[in-house]
Image (cartoon, rainbow, N blue to C red; front, side):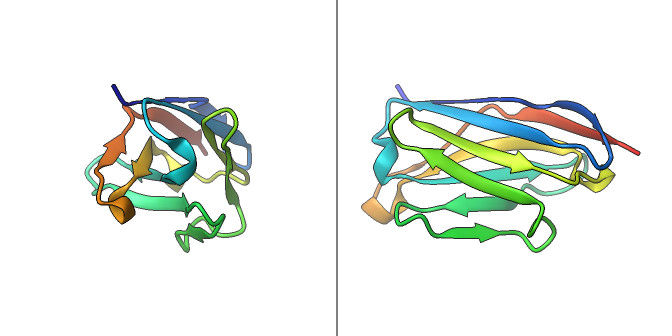
Length: 118
């Protein structure tokens, strides 16, 4: 059974930092493209950052220079370091494991709430 479990969300003031973690189990983590997405109230889910198996990263323009995605293949963990947080970063953040490049599915975590106060 595949599980992606996010942690590290919470309430932070604008300008602050948070680090999200996602623990993966039940998949071959090292061959999965890992990503973070977010969904704010009344908005569609959007990509925040992705990190593929070649350590190539992609970031949404809105977070470039502030957020950093990383992974630890030995521990099956993916992280999202979020600095200089803004109120518009408030959303539920979801971890994603994408195995479509291998003909497999996409898996999602349950999400963790991040709230940035002004």
